[in-house]
Image 1 (tube, helix red, strand yellow):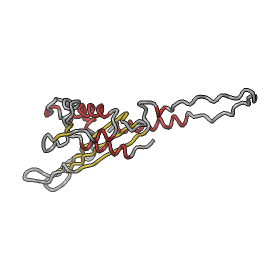
Image 2 (tube, helix red, strand yellow):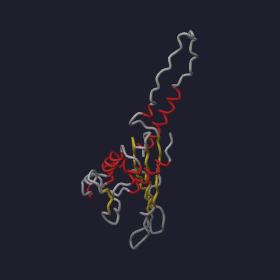
Image 3 (tube, rainbow, N blue to C red):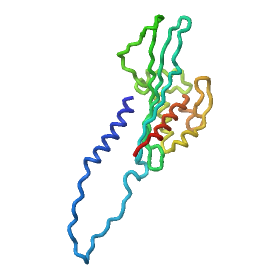
Image 4 (spheres, helix red, strand yellow):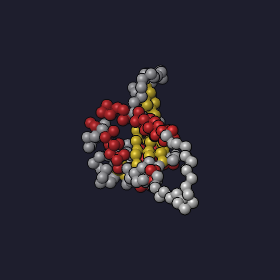
Length: 209
């Protein structure tokens, strides 16, 4: 979450600094008619350079599908999974930078349906948790979620949203129905990526100059 907010603050500060540093145009001195001033050659703007960010967008999707009813000795639990993506695109619509993160906010209840979770506790994202998220032990490739997401983010660099949406995926099991099925990701990403791709696609739809 911190990296997500930091990215937007950095982009905002850059924009403000560019505006603040601009100078009013000076009135050119008159030149004799026989020696007209030369017109400088046009140079491409920085935003048109290869690899430069021309647009930035934010995307998200929210699901409560992991919430559980009270059943037997198990009490009810509410859960909201919030997937967020901050993406920078170049002039051709290709991804230049991308940060994807997920918050799983869980609320526990007792048998009387009173909240048992600490409502004052900070809710950490998966990237904030890092090793504490606890995926490595169950991962067939021995990688934590944040490590797998770094590999997926790297794969998206240089691709358009259409190319990302057309990623070939496979169903690994009932809980992993959209796992990457391309050679460059099979050894680094075993999580289902549908929500992450949807957030990046929404970031493109929301992108502004």
